[in-house]
Figure: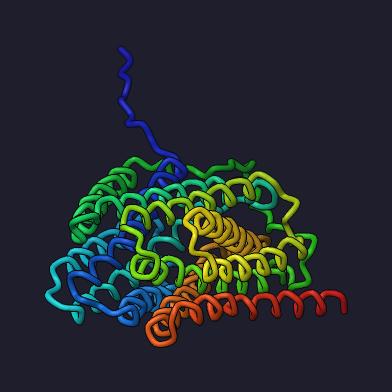
Length: 401
């Protein structure tokens, strides 16, 4: 008599990565807005202190991405993301229970360190084995997932924070616990079989360098350098938009928390749409014109935010900022890993670049707004894009020669 063994259904890596990226991005973006209101009401924090609070998070994230290189190479990404989620849960609980701003800085640092064990391993794990248009499609789907979470996060935080600034943090603590349970379950059920089966005795081929590359073979395209610089500068503007603009909108424009959440929801929706579309078209790959054009338009959109007092115009300008932030992100991510076999480390560089920009943007914009006012804030934030534009021009000239 034949015996049949029951085998539990296995999950592909995409079935774990896509939902996890959505859920994590939703939580982080809900915290980003919720913590602004919580720190302002619970700790009576100034704009400068709020900017530094987010600067601590991004600085620790940036340093950890660099210092954890050996850890990321030795520990499986499945284990890294579980450890990261535990650290983020502990850090957020610590912030919620902190009696003053001092301990909150410490727990915010824990959150930043923990995040470095989540995004780079997740992205390196996802992009392994993909090149060219297939790489563009898989990163497009990934960007659609995490940015969809980024859309919902501010909207939830804005509505949950109305009347009780601590409520968004409580909901995010519960959301972290649910994510941790999902990752633990997914790790036990993951299908570890290779995505592509090769004939016996053969080895995977080294990815070919993209056509626009002038770099050492196997290292990818030199276009990654202006794309990384553009990502840094774009995330510096995002540091102002996400962390300081809500304060300006509340005190300078007289908007409520739900209205501010709606504005940031529109920005995130526009960013998601841009990244999704870029994942399914390829004419922008290794295209210089689209790169410098996006950087110029982002500077102009930020300037417009400082001029307009109309809600509809501000919503349009924030949507434009979202589209161009997604444009800069996609360029940094795609050109950073294209043609390079060490995906996890390149993704770590990509995340370091963005975190550096976020540190610069949140800290400087908080100082500028508190001491020099809103007009100077938006002019200086637009000037954040000047290094990116200069870097584009310099790179273009080196390619011609």
